[in-house]
Amino acid sequence: MRLASPWTPRIAAGAAPAYERLIAALVEDITAGLIPAGARLPAHRELAFQLKIGLGTVTKAYGMLERRGLVQSMHGRGMFVASGWVREQGRAWIGGLHHGDARPSIDLAINIPPQALSNRLLTATFSLLAKKLHADDFGRYRPAIGLPTHQILLARYLATRGLEVAPETLLLCHGAQHALAVAFKVACPPDGLLLTEAFTFPGAIALARSMNLTVQTLAMDNEGITPHAFEQALRAREAADRPVALYTIPTLQNPTAVTMGEKRRRDIVRLARRHGVTIIEDDVYAIFAPDGVPPLAQLAPERTLHVTGFSKTMSPGLRVGLVTTPPVMSTSAIAALQATSTMASPISCAILEQWLTDGTATSIEAAIRAEALARMDLAQDLLGRAWLHQPNPGFHIWLPMAAAQADRIVHEAAAAGVILTPAAAFTTDASARDSGLRLCLGGPTRDELTLGLKIVRRLLDQSQSAMRQVI
Image 1 (cartoon, one colour):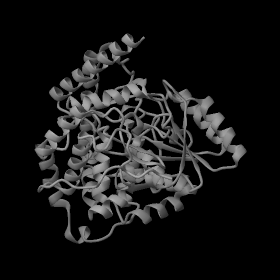
Image 2: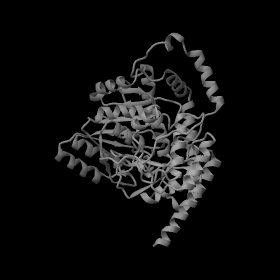
Image 3: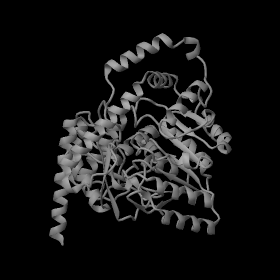
Image 4: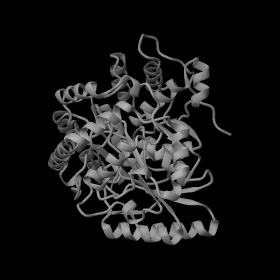
């Protein structure tokens, strides 16, 4: 039987949005000691019913608190106040909330590319589109899979990334997360097993949970999933006679930032073929792939659902995702797409078409790569030996450490005005002792990033000093 929450639900007074006032009430009561560390919080629907607010309001408030390391979701058990919470952190948060700002000042938790767009570029783009868009066309539904002209254009784009696909196998979606949802629906039956890296993309974990999939994590090394761990899991699966799929991020893996070399990719493909496994390849960081290293979908097109998008390579505002399917999965993929969308955004598609046609896309990607490399060099200078420089550029880095140490630093960073993602967000194994910190370098300005990294370095040094004293 689940223990009841000790909290008496309430929502703070004021004119702020309801989710902000719910956050304020929770932080105030935790700080006052009314909800101790480790205590259960009310279930989403229960809280929404008691406070007469929308379920989405509760979900948003809990989500913001969890991203900042103040509460923690435990699969199948509920939401809990994170251990290690201290009153000074609460006071810092309350100060921000009372000024209408629910965030500390430097966000190293949101993984977005460095800003490569300018107001001038956007103005010029929309001026061009204003001359091309027609009301009659804009007032109609388009095919759910996308216009053939866009499929052809995007197939050519993927070819520049080393992936040769037939345009008709390419489906347009509302961003990469939507494309991932379509791929999961095709590859994973409700009773299926999803294999993935020991630490992986939180959005994929959330998606798997929403589909009631069983997720099993696999051991990793400096190239991602190890063939030995993959083969062991597949042999165990055969004994249980259970359908299985592999979800992996082979380039700039999120959160660990490792990249599979060509030999490792071929080893993974060989095992997938031998055991009849469908691969879901998350390739949103494709612009950082080493030259000449092919995507998994190029090596095993008959069994790989290839997912990508443009939020990591151009801008989060460009909501176009792509899922490329093997021909035998095309019908089920289209059905999954049509069940979740009527069509991709015509405006986003028009922007993407313009940028791919006139060369703007190439310029934006080059600018993002250059800025990402510069920010990685900055991180190396400021973090020093705390971080071993990764061989491939990107805009997130990983600092391996014990899970308890990572959680402690997340909480201390929040008190110092820096947002980091809790270690638990990257794994489904609640008992895992090893984890790490992911630092996202793309969102802040250079000055903010410099200050944020200095704060993280100070906390790392303090943590190492405390550990030495214990020893």
